[in-house]
Length: 320
Image 1 (cartoon, rainbow, N blue to C red):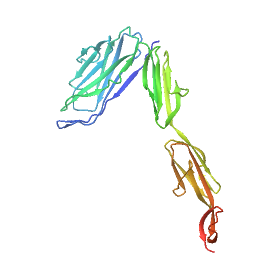
Image 2 (cartoon, rainbow, N blue to C red):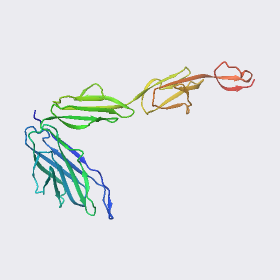
Image 3 (cartoon, rainbow, N blue to C red):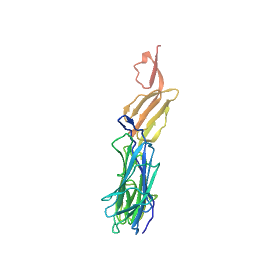
């Protein structure tokens, strides 16, 4: 099935700040866009490509573009300029000495009719600035533009808290397979998985066999949660109380308030006694927790009965 789809690869080149021979280079960017309207080229034996180069520098002395084309493909020509061309075993080079305000060139390739696998076109921008030597390289080779005579697209995206590998838009040759791996970051877990915009069973691996359709995968993640069980005896309140689900790494405050004639006798977290700041307990949540709060009634204890161990919160000793 013949498809015509637009494929764009935006390549943001690293910011350089260089001082050579006393000449200061201001930090800026060079951006290159490399695309074709027919990444799935079907029965076409010629494909047109476009490369746009944008920059903020005003002191560029020279600029060059290198394009690596697949084996057995043939470079035909630049369509809209009289640029010099050097072809070194499929590495096409051209350059500018009088640098225009912006660069947008088109060129045409002749494809090999027997190609059935994914092919790629890669680009490399080189430039030199006045007073700065050697040339700087805007290296975009790690992200080549992919093409196929027949193929389909898998677009994989992941939200904050994890990754899907590989990601982005991938061109897969018809009837080929593709495996994607989903991994949550520490303290995160997979929340939802959408396959072609429909909910799918959560898994760490997706395998597409004999691909014959386009697909989209979108995965979202959420913080791992832990359970807090908060219990208090009669004589006061804990807020919040009961069973709470709290995100990993969150700080949970519990307000502990005794009734007017009661005091806080003890607070235990997972069986360990803890102290309060005022009437507030602060917990850094990295595991499940059981919080047990005990209140006791205020009582006066006379000195002559000070050895009485009948229980209660003794807050003052009085003489008789």
